[in-house]
Image 1: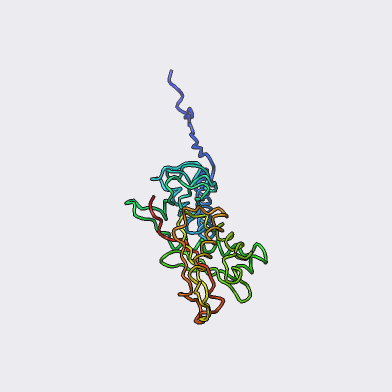
Image 2 (image 1 turned 45 degrees about the vertical axis):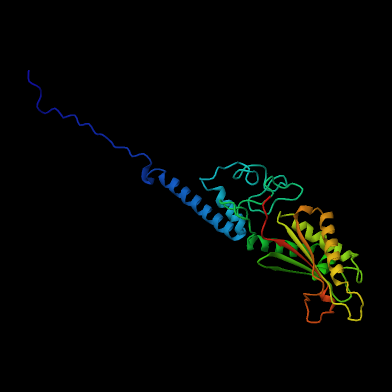
Length: 283
């Protein structure tokens, strides 16, 4: 028998199913999340640049530098970013401003940015460190009205030698009892303030005493002995406030040979100069 010629053909339809419909999947969500993350990182970077100091930015940059071995606790110690917390007095922060006399490093010198270079040449304090010390000293004046008045007797300046802190008398407000080396309470307060600042570094200190000229009618000129005695008293006051005696590089009496005012007998010429020296001698 022959098959019927009018039999309907069998048609098979294949449907192509596209998953995700018209949204083309979720890849755009990943791209958008990456964009948002990048923008957040950008704004955090801009905030850090505006809210941190130069040395803090240097520390952040060093932390993310892959060539430096990283420790989970940054700052201090003998290795790069090894040791304890940077806020601990037991360690030496790498910017050279964190060691104290009570907990000085073995090397006795601040290392890193302001320390010895690769060839071991003598350290010099940078102007940035000196400026930060100067700001630290001036910033302590807001603690009380008494201290604010005391800061009127301080003048600071940065020189090639280092940070010069000048303590001077005002009319009727002496640093020592008249023509003696007995310090007043004002001088004790000022030296305590300076000692707290000086303890944040390990650089040597120079102290110089200056006095006003005496009348010519005086038989024996005592300005040399007096200026040296007053400088020695300031050295003792600093040491009593925790400054290491080994940091005192020199104590000098200048007599009346370098007056601050043209009038050699002006009370303003009675002053003490404390210098945080740039150069740190090797041990």
